[in-house]
Every structure is written in C-alpha cells, then in structure tokens.
Length: 274
Length: 343
Image (cartoon, rainbow over all chains, first blue to last red; front, side):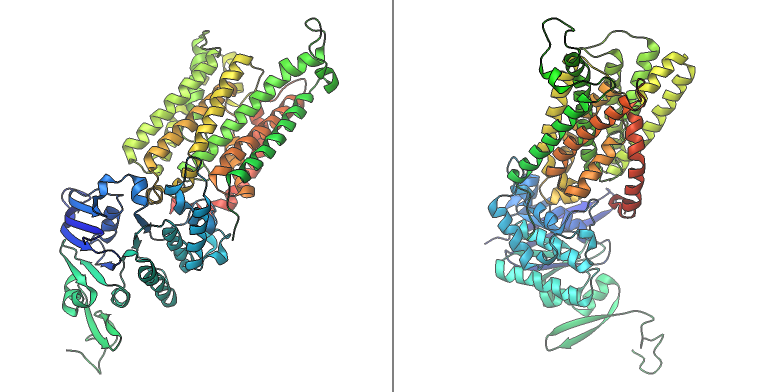
C-alpha cells in the first residue's frame, strides 16, 4: 500500500533567490498522525499550503491519494483535505452552526442548501467536538479554545480523509492544548483520519504523534517516528537552543534552556551546569 | 440544535417579503399631491383618453415611478450585500469601487458636450452614466488586480483613489460649466427618481432581476468567500473566479440602477446591515431579502421625496441620506471595533 500523501523532491521559494524547501521527500500512510515542526521560517505553514493546493511548488511532486495535487479541482481537493488554520475571526457575525455548516459547501447541489445527510454530518461533527452547546452563538463571543474546536468541527464536517492543522494549540492553555490533541487522536483512532499538524510544541508531538517531520532553516529535514527523530543533539542543531532531556516512564520530554534561565551558568550560582 | 436554512423556509420568507413589498408599492402609488381613489383606478381607463384621471395618474404616472424606485432599491441593496461580502468589509457600498465617480463623470461629460442621442430608449445622460460606471469599475478592478493580485485591500485602495481622482475631475468640470448645466448635474448626483417610459423600465427591470437571480446562484459561495480567500479555497470554492463573477454582476446591476436614477446613497449600505441584524449573515437569505426590503425602502423614501415639499420635489438621495446617516453612524460605532480585514 502506498501512502495517502507522497511528497517527492519538493522545491519551493517565494522568490527565486530564497528557497525554503529544497528537495523535500516523505510519504505518509493512511491513518497516521504526523507532526510538522521546525523553527520559524523553516516552511511549515508553506508546506501546509502546498499540501492543500493553495500554493504551487516550483519543482517536485505532491500526490494525494495517488493523484497529483494539481490535478484536483478546488472542489475535489476540498473533499480530500480539510484545513484548520490559525485564529480566524469572520467579518460578519456567523453563528457557530453556520460556520460548521460551511464545511458542506463542496457537497452542495445547484441551489446551495444542505440536504438531510449534510445536516446529520454537521450535527455529528458538532457533538464530537462538544460545540453544539454554543451552536447559535456568534463565533466572536467564544474563547480561543472554543473557537479552535469550532474550526475542528468544521474540518470534520468536511468529511475528508486528511486533516491539516496549523498550530492548533498555539494560543491555548494546557488543559485546552491536551483537549485538542485528545480530540485529534480520537479522530485518528476511531475514524482512521490521516492528520498533519504544524506545531511548536514538540513535547505534545512526542506524546500524541506517530511521526514527525522536522524542517530546518537551511532546507534540510528529518522524518521518522517521533521517538527516533527527536533527540537533544538534533533539537539543538535545528532550533539552535540547548535542551535538557528528561526521561520518564510515560515518555521523553525536552526542556529548552536559555542563557538566563534559572540555574543556568549565568544566573544560578549554586548548581552551575557544565 | 439550531435551525437550518432550508429552501422551503426561505421560499416562505421571500413570499412574505414580496407581499409586503407589493402592499407598500400599492399604498405608495395611492399617495400623492392629487388624491385618487382605488375604486376609480379599478374602473379602468374609460372610454376615451383622459376620461378617468385617477386611472391615468395611477397607471401612467405613479406606478412607473414606484416600479422604478423598487428596481433601483433592489439593485442597490443586492449589490451592497455582494460587495460587503467579497471585500470583507461591512462599510462597503455599491459605489465603493468607483461606480459613483465614474457614472458622475459620464453624466457631466454628457451634459457639457450637449449630446442629444440616446441608445436603446435611454437618455444620453443614462447611457453616459452606464458607460462611465462600467468603465471605471473595470479600471479599478484592473488596477487592483495588477497592484495586489487577489488581495482585496489593494482593490479597495484602488477604488478609493480612483473615486477621489474622478471626483476632482468632476469638480473641475463643474467649476468651468454654465450654471444651468451644473444644476442638472447636481440634481443627478443627489439621486433622482422620475417617471420613465415603459420600455426603459422593462429593460432595466429584466436586467436587474436577472442580475439578482444570478447572484443568488452564487450566494452560498459568498458565505465562505466572506471568511477570506484562503478559507474559501479550503472549502472548495474557487475564490478569484467566484469573486470576479459576483463583482461583475454587482457592478452591472449598480450601473443600471445609477443610469436610471442617479446616485442614491445609503440604500446599498444600510439595508444589508439592517437585514443582517434581523435575519443573520447567511447570504442565501441575506441577498434576496435585502433586495426586497431595499426595494420597499426606496419606494417609501421616494414617496416622501415627492410629497413632503409638494408641489416641489426633493431628490430621493436627500431622504435616504437623512434617514440613513444617523443609522450608519450607529453601525459604525457598533462594528468598527471588529472589522476583520484590518487585522
């Protein structure tokens, strides 16, 4: 079985001089959960945009479900790939239910009204994400965590095999971060969704994701199972920050250390490190 | 679970709104400086011309004017809905992308050059206004496209700059024109509904109703388009194509409205907001309901304009602006804190 996403020798730059992605290749099997990590400007969101077809690559190929991403129409691709982007507040006061209903747009007939099955899918996506409680409230009145769940509900109602998420937990507190990842993991396990999440939180990635794609600023990358890819040396090389690696019986974690952090060489007199 | 908008539910609402509109139109056609009785109107035209004055006033004078006001109101409100959606700006109106200044320039050129020929039953002023409006909108679109590609901010800025530039040209031409020429231009710029011939009404009516019907077909895509280009694409809507189609249709019906009645402000701005506040932002409902309410609003405004200082008449634009101005300021205070595209 070949992967649901196959990226081969991908090159991309916003200008000709400045190439972000240089010969990126990876394959993701159906039903896997991939974290995309790396420093700012390494091309994580760009890669997401390439995968959902909103940006075209300079060279190389991306295949979704064995077909080149460029061969899909916008509508067809929206039935394969759903995207949850960072923080969006609509101009008009759409209610939560209306925002989730927009997911059915690629499936609507000529007159543009939701059919019975459409409504069922919308209601189901809202109940899974626990957003039906505020279904009739305007999106602007929700907290960041609630809003993020609404957009995940919309992505689920789009009924696609692939979910792309751009930093789904970046503005959320710890409880909501874990809540979002729990929800995603559940969708992976129960429904066999293939999930790609851009994230800065490698510790959450370590706990939830099967694989990681670590993009470096120079266009290099590492891809593989999270436990194999992530280690102190690689993180220092890619993110240019030293970490303290802690091993517990539920997994490994990485604690970033700066020059002035407590108990560092500069600030901690009593327990100076090496 | 919240209620979904269904085709049936929407049809019922539209029929109720249309019934209200019909009642408003009939009522307003009976109001005027000359009192007429409905019974006399229904008695028919009479044996010879002029036998039944009530019938003549109703059918030949007031009805065409009421129909014109309804058509123009519907076109402006529908175009307002569409432009607010595609520019993602609650403060957009049908004139924001240069239609007003373009049409105004066309009119003043027609007045100054003293052309007398019309086209397809339109007066020279109407023809020049129509051509000026469409040419300017196309110019703004082209500038916006080359300057910023698909970003709507560039389109908005292009519209504002072209509007300012053409307004300056209009002022320059006005300052060198003779006073009676200036008077007719200013009357036109303030928005002015007058009696029109049936063929003109028919042609305008068919174009406007067809335009609104075509816009209705893309109205569910306007929902996702109002979330932004990227969101629209993620949800399977070809953003630039949909935007171009919706924009062309909105510009077309606005240009027709403008050529029929001059620049009537505020209808295209306040009606979409008022309807959105009551019925919500779903464009499948917002578009047709706004068009019908816009029609009723302008019919009433025009009835006030032609009766309040009778036997003289006010330009209807004065009435819509006096009623719309304070309302607009309230909206501005309420909405400006969360205008999404500024972020």
